[in-house]
Length: 373
Image 1 (cartoon, helix red, strand yellow):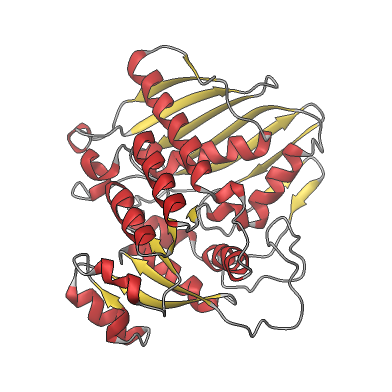
Image 2: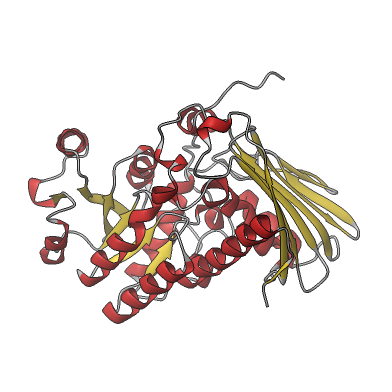
């Protein structure tokens, strides 16, 4: 198979987004409440997207397919984008904001939640502003660019009595939740080794993800966080130590501020180990777990699918879903019922990932094993 060169945009497009509606085959592991043949006709959670980049487009499609949420507002610094989105999604002028007048969203009763889809360095500011406006908040991953910022965001949301979530879409995706089940329920015995990697080739030297001030780091922050999540939800444990190594870039001139590729090793209390790579040097999307009595794997594993998986028992088959719609349905149901969002998508979960990623960078920079205890 010949691999083509991908940008992030072409990578996302090539992976595709499934448009199948969640079926009754999905268990409560991927949906907070069982879905029935009766369509939901109650009120929907009203969502504003803050930042209208590529991923916001995927979220908008997901919100159109969502049974429990709908797009009612946008926030953008570009008037031409505002006009395009307002027309395409039939949004009133009163629900269109820019970054200067964003705080007036507090007076808008047509918006319940703000989804932050901005560059990483802007997450903290707009999560805190949304919280002070009295809106629930979802922020895309990584939660922030530092542990200190993540802690500020959690406090601001708690002080404002609003809920904060991180966009961990794979917690609503059936293939990945099957990986979680197989690992945590020890279906093939205790997991001993996990290998998980995600990467694509960067071809745009001007993209913001290569600027440390905006991204906070390279592929570890952008892609490696998914690998980190997978190792944690398969084992059901928190890592106790990490070692890591930077890998040389293919095009050094493009990587003067962030790493081009990084590999790390996590040790878990049970003795399980995980080896991961996140990279802008290579196209890879793979998850493999070896247990005492078998294995389970996905490839593609972490992107947008369609996923393919197998275990020692044979091929894994689940519906091909729109991950953004599934995520928003899961969150929407909980918030509409005025319940607490599950811990695996919470701000505290995002903070745990930030702490581990800071330790991975410290290990790579020093060449030392870093304790996480």
